[in-house]
Every structure is written in C-alpha cells, then in structure tokens.
Length: 591
Image (cartoon, rainbow, N blue to C red; front, side, top):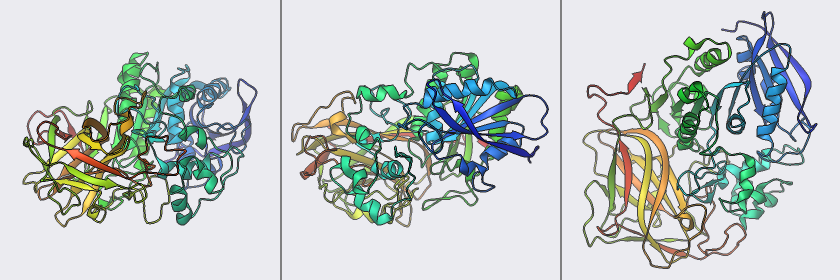
C-alpha cells in the first residue's frame, strides 16, 4: 500500500561534465520528513511513460509512494536531452555525473539505488564499474549482453545481445535500431510484420536499416566489426577484471536473451567486489518469463505455448526490501534473502539455492546416435547415455542460406507468424536440414538445472558455416517445445579473437553454449536435441563463403555433417539435478 502521495517536478536539466544537459524528472513523496534516498532510472525510451497511471508504467510512483525520491532521466541525445546519441558510449560517465548531482541536492541523503530492465539494466552495469560512492545498490533486470567476456572463451561473448556465438541477432536488433537508436531523435512507428520480414531477408546485412528507410544509426558500425574489435572497448562493457562496489539484485528470465549472462554478471560482481557488502550480496532471480516480464507474471502462467503453473513472485515487495536494506539502512530487510531464486519449469515451483549450479548437479553426457538418418523427427536419431560404436554412421544435411530453418520466437521483433516465448517445433522438425536426436520415453522424470553445452564433431564442404543446437521437451502428444538453444559461427571455434576457416571435409570439434535453464522433463516425456545451421530471422544467415557475411549478397550451399562414432563423438552436456526428495539436499522450495 502507498504510504505517501507523490509530487512530480518536471523540466529539470542536469548538467554533465562537458556541459551537455540531460532532461530529468524528480518524483518525491508529499509529507515525508527528513532527507530522501533516491532511486535512479536512466532511460532511452523517454520520461513520459513513467508519468502515466497504473498499469502503464507505475514504477516511479510505486517507489516514490514508499518514501523515496525517484529520478527519471532521458539519455544523452534522446527526446529532450541535449547532446548526440551514441549507443552506450556516454552511459557510464553520464550516470556518474547524475549520481553526483543527486548527492548534492538539499533533499538527498547521498544514497542512491539504480533500477531498470533491458537497456536500463545495461546502463547500470556500465555505471557500477565506476564505483561512485553514492551508488549503494542496483536492481538489474534483463541485461543480457553487457559483458565483454574473456575473448578466448566460447560462450561468454555476447556483444550487447547483438552477437551470439559470432552470429548477428537480427530478429531483436533490427526493430530496436529502427525504433530506438536513431541519431536524428525521430521515434518512428514500428514497421509491419511484412516490412520487417522483407528487411530481415535483405542482403547485404549492413543495408538492412536503409532498406526500411531508417535514418542514421550505429547499425553499420556494430555489424561490420569482428567480435574482438577494439572499437567495442570504449563502450565500457563489464569485464572479468572490473572493480565493483555495488550490491546488486539481478532479475532475469529463462525465455529472455542471455539467462546465463546474468549468472556471469553476478559472478563478476561478487568475485571483484571491493567491499564485503559487494562480495557477499549479489543475488539473482530467474523466472520463466520473457523479456522484462518477471514482475508481471500472472496465474495461470502461460509463456509462449507453454503452461507453467503459477510463477508469480511478489517482486515489488522484494524490490522495496532491497532498497530499504541498502538505502534506508535497514539491513534486516535483506538478511536471509536467498543468493539464488529460480523457477523449475515443469515442476512449476520456485527454489532457493546458495550457488549456481545448485549443489548436487552433475554433468552427464548424452550422446548423439543414429544409423545415418537423423534428418527430421521421423528419422532414427537417438539421444543416449551409452556412447556410440566405432563405426556409427554420420549424419549430413544440406544448408541453403536461401532457405534457412525458421526460428519461431523472435525476441523483440515482429516477424510474421512469430511471437516471443517457447513454441512447438514439430513442423520445423520435418525439414531435411534439421537433425533430431531424441531420447527414449523417460520412465522417471529428469531435472536439468544449470549451464548446457553441446560438443559436436563436425565437418563441412564450406570454409565457414554455422551450427545451431536446440534442446526441446517432447510431450507425449508429440509437441516439441523449445527449452534453450545456442549457435556458433565455426570460424570462431578457437576463440572470438581470431578467425580460423575450415578445410572442406576435415573433422573439427566445436562447442556450442546453450545458455542456462532449469527444466523438469516428466515421466512420459522425451528429451530432444536439434542440430541445424540456421535459426532465421533470429540470427543472420551464414553465407558459407568464408567472407564477411555483412557485406555479401551471394552465398554457397553447404553440405554439413555431424559425426558421432567412438573416435569423433558428439554429445550434449546436461546438468542433471539430484533427486529432490533425497535427504540433506541444499536447495529448498519457496512456498
């Protein structure tokens, strides 16, 4: 229940160190005695939505009505703020200067917490590395892609969600750049499904934004550079050697971009914390929602085409407890908060753990097996804990970039016939360019909780190609619902700091990071791993030439092979949780 009515002060101009002024609103509780701690929201989507009554964007009102000042600020170069917009380039320093301005106000206690989802979460991660003394805590939602990662490590390189495994995420970023990243401050209406569909298919990729009439953006710079280009270093991504002094609550979702990124962010914040508070108070919540949807889950919970029980969590009370603990100096509000809270899909229950993966999880190899005909779900591909024989036949499919395998849940895009969240892939699995490896019907349920990785022995007729791996839950009625997936552009198999082409026909081992999940496969279900070379339009198509991809309009057809004999095994590493009924397990249900 709100404790105060709220007054809104608009038209403020907060000066940055270079003289640029940023448009800012301040919400304050009426009748509050004494100085106020502050919650800062820096947004590239405008201040106006926060002024609207429930249910549109009540966040600022919710926090202010509980006795906080709430500062909502438009980023440099957007809406009413001065300066020129450049994606992420000024976010950290501008955030730092805004913290200094807040701390200097006569109504301020000098204690500030930050809040926001997606781009608003990424700005918090950039800011946290500057260790401003007023930055006492953060709630970071849906901020996958804010880490630069160790460029030698596969799986840690997601450049602001624009690239995953070296492939460009078209489905999310084409609409995003068009609608939110224009340098001329215009805010165009979204294109129609058909217009976006044509845009996704445009070659060369560098011209996609031009094809739909977008004015100047950073698209061309972002897609034309290799993942390790030093150009990205100036953006201030979270690094493995970053210094952090901000307790943070990370909130992410299994069906959002980069759930695994949130765990890596939590790990970096904790391991590099400059104080006991920063080291010991990095917490994370993982829900089954789609992007930025954790706080608004309803009952019954239906995500995409999947029914997931009742996944509601009292997020607003959790958030207020968090801010009260760090900003109002009421530590009892955060003591006892689980380090990890996660929703087990299928079991449809919340669990708490002290670490990730939870104690008791063991990695198991589930081998890809077949008689050489794993093409389509009607083939003889098997997923088996028994390793393959010496002479097991490989599986080959034809990848034609002119006819890519469709992805059925484009994050953030409007591709015709697609929505976000889990979908049924039965029809897609009838394509000859999709290999399907399926377990026997499970007699006992199996919980997969942790990070998932596919290790494949592959060869190709092309110098370079992509491999996509997708884990699915196959229901007794045949529905094949996606759980988690990943991609690797094979030229980056030795690291994202180099490109190494293939010799046609030679066998290579590659690793594909399938992110993180927690999923219960009940008795009667089966586990399936799909292998293909495209997931369009979520990812751009590898044109198989060994060229740049982003500046090319011609492609070649690739004959791609997955090997799975004893000498060249292929398998998926599944993190299998111990039987939750065994005594002494360290995880607990959250009732």
